[in-house]
Length: 206
Image 1 (cartoon, rainbow, N blue to C red):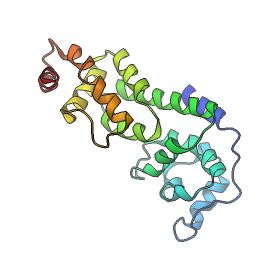
Image 2 (cartoon, rainbow, N blue to C red; image 1 turned 90 degrees about the vertical axis):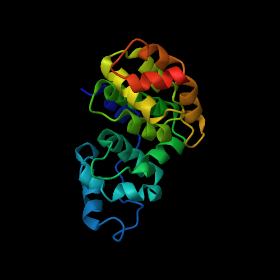
Image 3 (cartoon, rainbow, N blue to C red; image 1 turned 180 degrees about the vertical axis):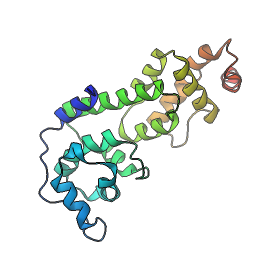
C-alpha cells in the first residue's frame, strides 16, 4: 500500500466529485475528456484523461482542483503531459489547511526518497518541480543527508556537476537554502572517492 498517497487522499476527502468543470469547453478541453473526468472515479483516471485538463488548471474551481489533486500528484510526472507546471504552481500558492499541507509535505518527501533510491530517476528535475510546490528545501536536503547509499550519492554528484556555482537561477528561498547547503555536506561525501571525480573537484574548489 502506498501510505503517503493514502494519507493524501484522506487529507483531501472533504472535496467532492464536481458535477461540472470550471474550464474552457469544448475548445480547450474536449467534451469527451470532461465527461470522463466527471464520470470515472478519480483513482481510476490516467494521465491521458488529464491531458487537456492540466493545461487549463488555472481556471479550475478550488473544490474541483482539491478533488483531483491527489490523483494528479499520484500520476506525476505526468508522462506525455509535459511539465504541467500550472498544477505545481497552484499547489505551492493555494492556502491549504494545516492537515492538507502536512499531507502534501509528506507525499513530496516520500516521492523524493523514492527518487534517491532509484538510479534511473532524475533528482535534478524532481527538485525543480518540488521548489514550485513546497515552501522550503529543508526536508529534502535533510533526507539527502540521511541517505548515504551509493545511489543517493550518485544523484548528489549529478546535481553538483549541473550546478557547479550554486543555485541562483531565480534567487528565491529554495535557491539560497540549497546554495548554502551545497558547500558543506557534499565535500565530506566525495572526499576519498574516485567514482565521482568531477563532483569532488567542484566541491573542493568551493
